[in-house]
Every structure is written in C-alpha cells, then in structure tokens.
Figure (cartoon, rainbow, N blue to C red):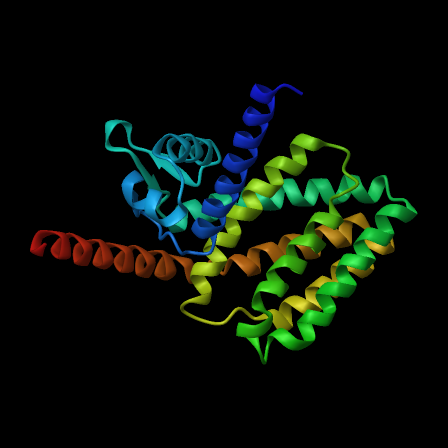
Amino acid sequence: MSDGAERAAGSATLTEALQERIRQDIILGALEPGAKLRLERLRKIYGASVNTLRETLSRLASEGLVVAEGQRGFAVLPVSLEDLRDITYMRQLLECHALRVSIEHADLDWEARVVGAYHKLSKIDNLVEDRPDEFGDAWEKYNQEFHEALISNCGSRWLALFHRAMYDHSRRYRMLSLKTKPFPRSQSAEEHKAILEAAIARDADRACAILQAHILKGADLDQPGEVAAKAQKRGAARRRQGNASAKQK
C-alpha cells in the first residue's frame, strides 16, 4: 500500500471512530435533542478538524440522527411522540420479519448465538435492577447483542443495517425516558426469556407476537410525549443560559 493510500485509510478510520463517538453521545443524550452542533465548539470537545466534523455530521444526517440546516449548520434531531411512534412501528416491522426469517432458516450456529447472547443478558438482568449505575451500560450492550442475535440468520445485510438504525433511534428515546423514570428491566427479563424459548422451539408466530409486544412496551408510548417535551425544555433552557453567558462575555 502506498503512503497516500495508508494516509487515506487512516483518515477514514479516524472519521469512522469520530462518527461512532458522536453517534453514541446523541443516543445517550450527552448531545441533547434539538441542540445546535456548532463546529467550533465540537472541535474543542472532540479534538477533530472542522472539515472532519462537517463530513462526520453529514454522515450522521444521512442516518437521521442529525439535521442539516442549510447555511445554518447542523443540529441534533429533535424528539416527538409522532417520531417515536414511527420508529417503533418500523422497528417492529423490521425486527419481527427478520426474526421470522431467522427461525425459518434456524440451525445450530444460530441457536448457539441466541442462547449465548441470552445467557450474558440474563446474568446482568439479575444485577441491574438494584445497581443500575454499575450495570446499566453492560445491560444496554447485552440487550442489543441479544436482539441482534435473534435476527442474525435473516440472510439480509440491508435488513440488518436498517434494523440497527431503528434500534439506535429507539434506544435514544429509551435513554431519555430513563431520566424521568426507571426502565422496568425485571419485566423485560421475563419477556426476553419467553422470546428465547419460542425462538428455540422454532415457534415463529409466538416469538414474533411476544417480540412485537416487547418493543411496544419498551417504547413506553404512554409517556414519551412527556419525555420529549421535558427533553426539549431542558435543551432550550441550556441554550438560553449559553447565549446569556456569551453576551456577558
């Protein structure tokens, strides 16, 4: 590989790492819904050039996590009850279809992945309810691994990519919801076990029915309107404080 090709590969790797870092900050709420993504401020936070940041934010805009505002720059995608409903519907549609196909093509390798992912998640399920600050991040990681293992036999790269996008968007709302009330992980644990048992039994109808209800319940559609409103108000208040501080300076 030539020096130029190596530099290009290194630059691409750094951009991808930055993209994942900012993606996680948006999903976890460190960058709040509706917040303006000012390049100079981001440059200081992430230690990246303005050009690299602009390219990264453009990529995140294509994922729907960032909004490009023309000449005004970029902002984090706002939240709304309508958006959550749309995300939840799409995630149900994609994940249930992918699970059904995975069960139709079930083999021992797929079964081992699902059982292995569930084993790790179930161990954390027993700990996270009483110690969420200590085990919350691990629970999120293993929960995602379990859901991805369930659909890992669907045989479609595009289906897996679109599902990952919807999962990330729904996780963003869940992280916002955790700021206002705890997520009922003990109830979720029972549903995970039921999904596992139905999937291993090759009962696609039952597995998909439980999964569909699980996704809907996890979205907490009775409350996210309140969650979205509170998130928007917090962001607006912080932006007003920031503007006031800038004027004083």
